[in-house]
Image (cartoon, rainbow, N blue to C red; front, side, top):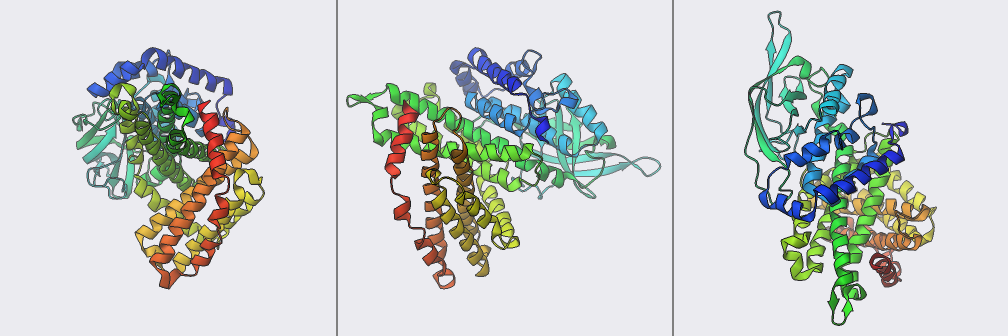
Length: 538
C-alpha cells in the first residue's frame, strides 16, 4: 500500500457523514438494545449497509476492483466511528475485511480479479475461517486437513477438506469463506462459496457481548474445493499470508477498543454534566473527574496516537509491522475495556441498567481483548520480538527512540519518557544476560513496559508537533505528560519486580531504577489532571 492509494479527504468525510446518518436513522439506542436482547443477526440492516445506497464494504476494496481505495489511516477512522455506533455491527464489517485479506495479500492476479471484484459487485458477506476448537489463538496448531484429489494424469485437480472451525464471525450468514487447512506442503488458504456440499454452519453462539453479530462453528465434511480456489496457487503459504495481515487486522481491532472506549467515556462525561450531587454537578468533583474520566481519556488519546502512527507507516508501504499491530491491539483494547468499566462505575446504579447502554458497551468491548489473539498472546509476541530486535541492534532500537524524544519540546513529557526508555533498554539486556527471559511472567512484565513506552512515544510526538483532533495544544501536552508519567511508573514498578524478584541475578538494575527519580517526574501531576478534566468536561 502506498500513499497514492489513500482515500480522497472529501470522500472520507462523505463516508463519515453517511455513518452518522445511518446511526441516526437505523441504529437508534432502542434498535441497538433490541438487537442485543434478541441476539439475532440484523440481516436486513447489514444488507442495507452493503447495498447500493450505502455500499460501506467498498472502503475495504482497492480502486482497481471497484472499491474506494481506503488506506489503513482512513479505515482506522471509519472503524473507530463504527465501533462507537455499535461494536456488534462493526465486528460484522471487520470480518468482511478480514475474510478478504488472504485474497488481498496472497492471491494470484486472476484470483484477485475474480473474488475481490465479486465481493465488490455483489456486496458479499465474507467470513474468515481460521480458529479451531482446540487451537484457539495458536494458528500453527491446525488440525483441519486438505487432502489432494488427483485427475487421471496424476495432477492435483482439487482438495477434500475435513475439520472443524470455531467462533467464526459471519459464519452462518456469509456468501464467501476463506478457510485455512493443512495441505501436504503446509497450511494453505482456500476460497469456498456458501452452499458448497460438505460445508455446514452450526448453531449461532449465545454470547456475552456483541450479541447481534453472527458467530458460529463450521464443519467441513469431505468438502471439495477445486485447485483454482487455492489462494496463491501454491500450497504452504497460509501462515505467511496470515502473518502479512496481522499488523493491519490487529490495528483495526485496536480501533474497536478505542471506539468502544470513547463511546463509554462520552456517555460518562455527558452524565457528569447533568447529574447533581450534593448541590453541584459531578463534573466539578475531582473524585469523579480525576478517578473516572481523566485516566481513560489520557489512555485513549495515547492509543489513538499510536494507531495513527502505525496506520501512516502501513500507508507509506512499510511491512513487518506485526509487533506494532500487537502493541496497538493490546493497549487500545485493554484501555477501552477499562474505560467501559469505569463508565459503569461513573453512572452508579444507572450504569447497571440496560437502557443507559454502558453495561452493553462493557459486554461488547470485552471480546476485543480476546479475538484476533488474546492480550496474553499479544504480550508474548511483543516481548519475544522486541527482545530479539533489542539484541540484534545491540540496544540501539530503544536508544534511538530515546534520542528522537530528546529532540522534542519538554512540555510533552519527552524528557522523563526518554529516561524511562533508556532504563527499559538496560532491563531487557540485563534480563537476557541473566537468562531471566526464560520466565514467561518476566517476559509479560517486559511486554507491558515496552508497550507503554512505545505508545507514550507516539503520544509525545503527536503532542510535540501538532494539536489533536479538536483538542487544544495545552490539553494534548498535559495528556502526553500524564501518560509519559504513567509509562515511567510502569518501567519502575515492573523493573523493580524483575530486579527484586531475582536480586541475586539482576541487582545491577536497581541503581538505574533509582535514577528515574519518580518524585521529580510527578511534579505538577495534579495540575495536568486539572487541565485535562477542565477541557474534557467543558
